[in-house]
Image (cartoon, rainbow over all chains, first blue to last red; front, side, top):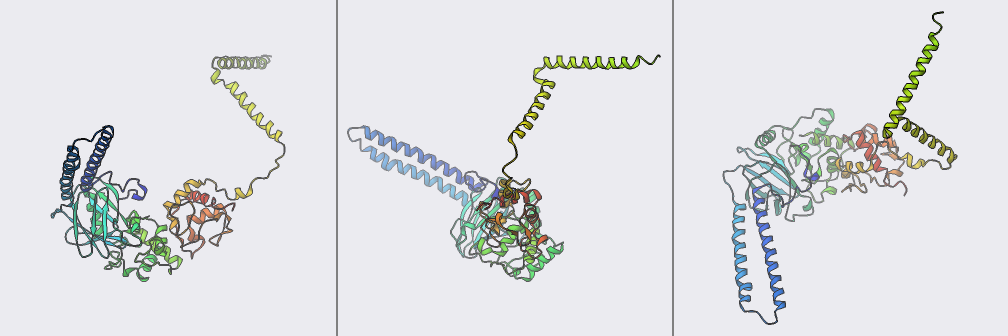
Amino acid sequence: MNGPSTLDTYGSQTSFSSAGTGADATLVLTTAMSVAAAVIFLLVMGAVWLAWRRDRPGSVWWIWGGGVILPVIALGTLVVASTFTLAAIGRVDDGAPVIEVTGHQYWWDIVHDPEGRALRDANEIVLPLNIPVTLSLKTEDVIHSFWVPSIAGKMDMVPGRINRMTVTATEAGRFRGQCAEFCGLSHPLMAFEVVVLPQAEYDAYLEDLRSEARDADTAQLARGRDVFLNEGCIACHAIRGVAEGARLGPDLSRIGARATLGAGMWRMNVGNLAGWIADVQDMKPGAQMPSYNHLSGPDLRAVAHYLASLK
Amino acid sequence: MQGKPVVPLTLAGVAALVLVAITLVSVWSLAHPQRDPVGNALAAMGARLDGVRSWYAQGPVEASPDWQAMRLNVPGGDAARGRLAMVEYGCGACHVIPGVASARGTVGPSLDGLARRAYIAGVLTNAPGDLTRWLMNPPLFSPETAMPNLGVTEADAADMAAYLYTLGPDA
């Protein structure tokens, strides 16, 4: 689980290296189209050069050939190729396990559903390696768009609809995704990470999601837990075994184990957590969470340390 | 009577051994000019003497040391490494820090011009050792502070202090 975050890794958000079947098909189509476009451009420039050299008009068949027949062949090929690619990308495997991803302003709610029991996480989608998984894409508010360039996407998350997409991650590692549809003030700050794990580690992750969050085992962590319980955090956030049920904000049961804070935007550490809690609206303008700048200094420190300890 | 010749004989023996040794070393040195230990030793001594001579030649020191710069010198601190460490520890979530990526937080004070401040957080004097120790464990010095203990190592703290002291020392 603990690799360097995508914030430290150059090239973790690119469609030029594919680590999933959907991105694979898109990359092949893009490359073929670019090569074909370059060849056609050179042919046209060659024809222009020939016309320039000739001192009399050419045959009318140049018009028919270059103006009608060639475009029909090129565009027809393109239609066929892109139709097959789209069909391959859009294929939904009904037997595959389902992961539900719900877009919110400006974060991602993740529900794993291995045997009909919702296991909730946020902002970090863990996928099993080489196993098809169906992503069930929804939105809680406005239109968002799910896009992990190296693995799959884009697919819009439209209010009132459930869009589904089966993806197969073919490479272990961390990949960065991004909301690809303008969704409000902090749209550029709405990213996430996809973590692809081998089956055994994936099962261990699901087991972790079944169990209660780590206990507060020092005086300061216990104080942080009390701040979390008493200052209103539980109205929106759930921590398994401490306060459950709230779904307005991201589930925090394993927040300290994530590599990033604020939906893929900052490194997860006590410093960023404290700054985030005290001044969310400065770090992520327009987020639903209010800035908790009324906490006393020691309370702020305690709750930041407590959240960082939840692994 | 029997003991009398012993001392001169011993002296003669030692002298002979020394002569033989000097001869051997000289021959070896001549045969290996690159690894000449005697010549090297003499050259080193000469260089040292040159240093002493030039020190005397300079005469008394006119300019006093730059105490202002030395006051802000953090032993073992590397400002370039410190700038990167401040990104890693998330300092920018609360502080404006010129030159540190996306450090534009308004939770705590801006760290611009920190080198000119008199106190750190109002509780410690603004000196390299104090700043380093503050970065390692702020609540130890200011129990009511909102700044958490970020688990900063001493080496990282020295690096960050070195960077912070590049902010506005001469403005």
